[in-house]
Amino acid sequence: MSKLTQTALKGPLALAKKTAQSKPIPSFPTKYLFPQHNQRVMDALAGFVDPAKRRQFNKQKNPPPRVQYQRQTHLVATFRCPNPTCKGRRWPSGVVFTAIHAYHDHTYNATVYNQRCRACNTLGSIKLDVDVYVERVSYWLKKWAGVKMPPHAEKNKITPPHEEEYCEGCKAGLCRRGARLVCVGGVKDKRPTLRLSWVVELWHAIWSGKRHLSWGNGIALMFRRNQH
Image 1 (cartoon, helix red, strand yellow):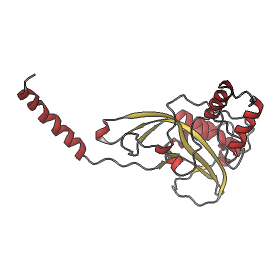
Image 2 (cartoon, one colour; image 1 turned 30 degrees about the vertical axis):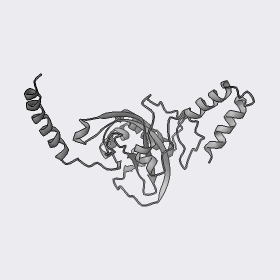
Image 3 (cartoon, one colour; image 1 turned 30 degrees about the horizontal axis):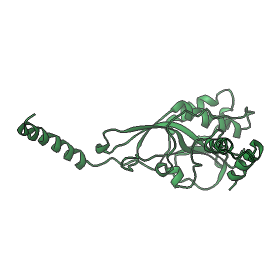
Image 4 (cartoon, one colour; image 1 turned 60 degrees about the vertical axis):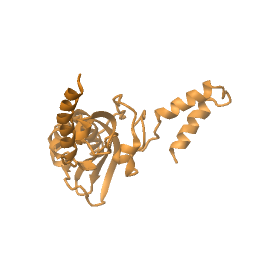
């Protein structure tokens, strides 16, 4: 390709790049509420909770601190970077930090925390896995309404490792970092959290020659670490 042709091609490419850089970047919030999914949550309560006892969705982003119950969990979603220079970069996450709250005024909501693009640190737009959202929220609303529920084990979707520096839940000091084998406890039904990274660490310690560390002592150590 001749230099003249290369120069001719560079012109439009440079112009397109400059145009992309000059476009304003759409802004997205650090956390979301999804009142549009409330009807599906109410449908999931049918047959379990009397309509008169069902909580209404609280649309306030900063509701009063009269929390009756709360539960922290992780949802599944795909994020998209709105920055034109990232050309629509997307990333999946199975560790989308979410706080479910039930208030004394007989309302509830679920606050879903956003994530940032690793390439440019811009807050992303979220495409939520609605089925997982409805299942997690309706489970705790049933339980808080007095319905006998089986122990809840989260079915975590395998996604890339959680990156704390780009998670708004981690930045707020709320998200317990990384992959977990059981769900995180809130005010009610608090249980210890077993982190996958600790299991890997324990396995590596034993098989690298530290035979003095037994499986029993190692597991006890992991749960003690979780309490700090």
